[in-house]
Length: 65
Image 1: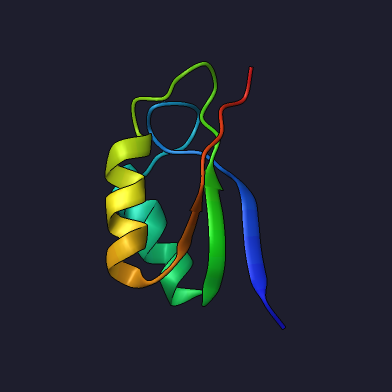
Image 2: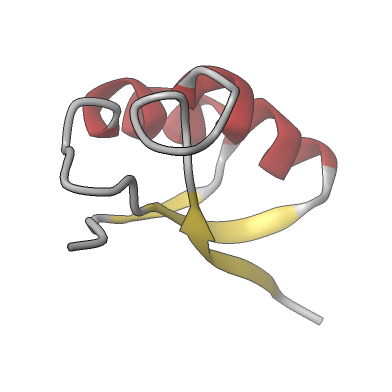
């Protein structure tokens, strides 16, 4: 089974974790591909992308409007 999470939020939206911490949690859950879709913000995407890359997780760009 391939795990995918296309609806993550960080503290740049209504989440409570930094983008890097969201990526770490996804890695712990063995997610293979993920999207950070904060509300009306792209601010967390660079850090999220870098951390996912270090963890071997595929990055999908997104935003929730």
